[in-house]
Image (cartoon, rainbow, N blue to C red; front, side, top):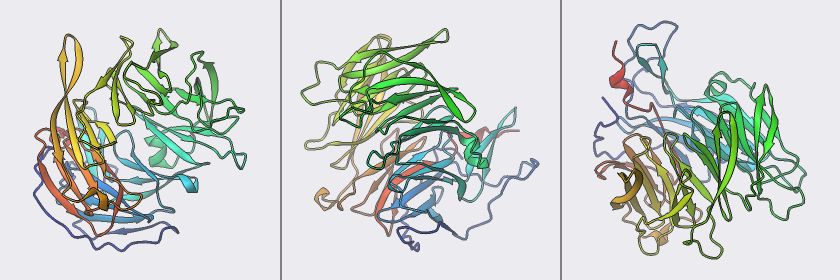
Length: 445
């Protein structure tokens, strides 16, 4: 069975017991057929490892998170965190969920229970029950989490009112899985709403003048890991005012500025930074506040309000993307599919836009392939503080509607809605966890 397995149209009313909004972490595993847990040896008997993956959903106003088995939309586990999470991310391999509790200065991790190991002549899939990990991060106001090819960078903003400086941590999934705290941390000399990108032994992170009137940084530095700390190797001369947002691809690291995008590239072991200035499409007050990229791609995508800009750093060009937004809609989320071939945009009116990549004159261009109305509700009924949310697997887009208390599954290729997962709570955030690629079929001895 592959990730292309067609999910049956099935509604499942979930009667999970909700936990309080804070308190001790607890886990309630829902009784199902036994799951094969890997032992020391390999007897090649691993049961039916889920190729559809699992969906982790947070509940509005609660520390409760719920995991669903997407093979049959069954409730798999209910897990209580220490505090209510504000942000939710998946680790590089999609095995772990990273739950950021910004207001409570903590990041917790949940093992989704699906992963693979390289056994030389094949990739070996494993499956076990989800679990809250012992590994956690503690620091002042964790905010921006960025995921590289195999590493994660978490930036802690610090607290200016209480004199707590910013910091950044760089780690990988081995640290999460083994509760290993032997990872480097960079301590800054002031607080800031910053960002960082982990890339091998290097951490690219922001700097801020302590006397600046804004908490947003305006400089970028490269730090080299040495055990449990970093050495600052260089600070780039190019200024990046009101910096907010970063990303990386195969060739470069990028940071968004008020007047453009700074791109850092490497050649013969030497790093250099240059700026691509905002195009003529920018109006007064516009700036890129978020960046997206595919790790194997060559482009960056900048989000400026509800406008999207495609950034070609090799040509030093920035071009506005016409994603044909629905009238009155604002952009809520934009992500690239795991294969990098589809750009997915979710807007405030409940429309999902799928743009496909096309090569023309040795350049990659994006054209609108599908636009779907994924909500029959009146958006005026959206609960206060909520909005439509989405996450992507290899083949599906999952869209959560707080109004209708359900999650829809949309096929990335033919744009068909195949599943409705009904909830008895208001969904807040969600992320897909599972094995990336058609590993179940590739497990051939």
